[in-house]
Length: 68
Image 1 (cartoon, one colour):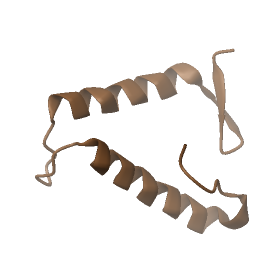
Image 2: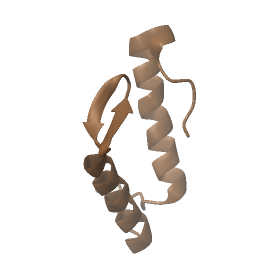
Image 3: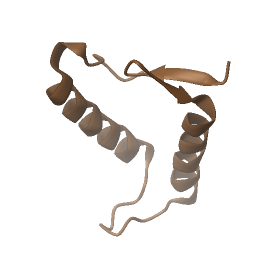
């Protein structure tokens, strides 16, 4: 307990929880980034999809297929 497998690696579940909570705080507060974009659920999904696409490109067939 207290750990999560991410891309075959074990990570501390608390770190994932803290990251998730921070993103929620940014969305909830309507934080505006240096780019002028407001952090919204749509922006978070877009950035996550872009990052996942980059991981897939690097890992090929070993990469996860979709976001949860």
